[in-house]
Every structure is written in C-alpha cells, then in structure tokens.
Amino acid sequence: LGDVYKRQTKTSERRTYMIKIQIPATSANLGAGFDALGLALTYYNYVEMEESDRIEISSSDDINIPTDENNLIYISAKDLFNICGKNLKGLKIRQTNNIPMARGLGSSSACIVAGIVGANMLLGNPLSTDDLVDLAAQIEGHPDNTAPALLGGIVTAVFDGKKVHWVKQEVYTKLKFAAIIPDFELKTEKARACLPSEVSHKDAVYNLSRAALFSASLLTGKFANLRTAVHDKLHQPYRMELIPNAREVFDIAYNHGAYGSYISGAGPTIVAIVDENNKYFSGKMKFSLDNAGLSGWQVHEFHIDNDGTKLIAT
Ligand code: HSE
Image (cartoon, rainbow, N blue to C red; front, side):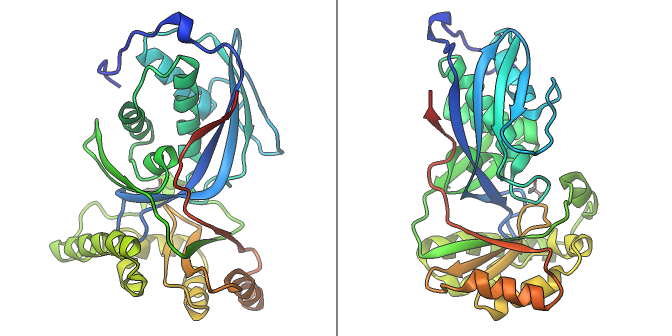
C-alpha cells in the first residue's frame, strides 16, 4: 500500500469510545461503465466499532460472518492502522448486515469502507477523503463500488493501480432503482473469471460511447437514452450465462416500463431504472416474476444516496 499515506497521528485525538457508521449499498458498472461507474443506494449496513485489547466481532442478525482476524472490516481497519504507523491490538465490531452478500450490491466494498472509515475516525481522521478512496480501491482492486460507498451519488472513477481519479455527482432525479435480487449467490471472482482477456476495437468503442452516454443522460434527465446506454459488450453477455433466467427478468422489467436494466456489479442482481411515477413497478414486477415461475427473485426499490458513508452515533 506504499508509505505515501504515512502520517503522524496525535494519540490525544484518538477516540476510545464506540462509533457507529452507516455504509450504503452500491450498484457498479451501470451497464457499459465496467470498473468505472457506480452509484450508492438508500440501502445500508451499520457497523459499530471501538478499540479493544482483543478481537470481538459479532453481528446483530443471523448472517454468518468471520469473527476473527479474517473479517474484512477488521482486515481493512488494520491496513489503515498500519499505514498510519499505529498498532492495532484488537477491535470490538458489531455488524448489521442488510446488504445481501455476493449479490452484486457492494457488500464487500461496504465492509472495506466501514473498516477504513471507522479506523480513520478512531485515529482522529489522519487520512483525507482522497486517501480513503485510494486505499479502498487498492484493497478491493477496482473503484466502482468502493468510491460511491464512501462518497455517495454517482461516481466516475479511473484507478491507475495506485490512485483513483474520480468525480462524484449528486443526483436528484425522479428515478428509483429497483434491485431484482435472486435467491442465489454469484462470487465476483467467478464472474470476473468468465470474461475475455481481450476485446475488439469495435467493442471498446461500443462500450465507451455508452458509458459516457449513461452518466450524461442520467444527469441531464434524458432518460430515453438509458435503454441504449446500458448495453455493453465487455461483461454482461458473458455473465448472463451465469445467471439463470436473467433474460426473462430483463424482458419483464422492460414490459413494465423500466428506462434501462443492467446486471448490478458482477451480478446476479439486476437493477431496473424506473420513473418515480411508475408507482406500482415493484408489485407488477413481482407478480410477473411469480407467474413466470421465478418466485426466488425479490424486488426492492431504492433511491440514490447522495451522502455516502457517515457517522451516525458516538
Ligand atoms: N466492476 C466490478 C465487476 C464490480 O464487474 O467485476 C463488482 O465488484
């Protein structure tokens, strides 16, 4: 992680009491913006954190999480302590995991961001927002979930392997984002392993034009463009093969008036972008899914979170 982050922190600034932070779910790629575009959703994990002499990790729900040094929040917090030249003996962590795991909604990024933001707060905020965005991407390997989880809004990001060059834009539109979540997991490693190592010049142009069209259309309200903008040739055609019934889910979403639908992150969740005035979208979607024998898919509507990760209690 390099020593560019090494900073002096004053022990007097360290917090020795419990903090509680809220971290949003994220939806990455947004169709054509593979590893480059992502947005934060109004769907949250919560993490309480306090310095301790030992590792004490628990969860406030039934979700099975590592409770030792293999816990991703702990690993990420320890990375931040190391970078700041501080010794971390242990941490007391309590997780509330609303974001489902391995579903393409940024659950691992939420852990990474929780770990580094929490640790940074405990140390009196030695690292800047830019430092945190860089560190989160270094841990995750790509920035399109970690950056919006930290910053909120829609984030355009280029990761050069060390630094993230990013722009966050707040979004205030009459849009909602319906996450259509199946009852099976798809691990990101598997969903990345199925991608080709090379693509044609034509396919590259196909994607970059659509990725640019996506954010420009979203931000200016030209929503009719979204259906074209979400198409891509870099990942979705390959990942469709790993998501049984994805084609039917896309068709149903478009039949009920979605502006655009795309595989969220590495999948298997599919996100439909829908007008706020399309009041009964989720109900109609669920009814049609059940009728098509796809009752394992659940539909949840969210909006864009413009705040990103924040402290909600000390
Ligand atoms: N951009 C990443 C991918 C997001 O599509 O693999 C999932 O972590």
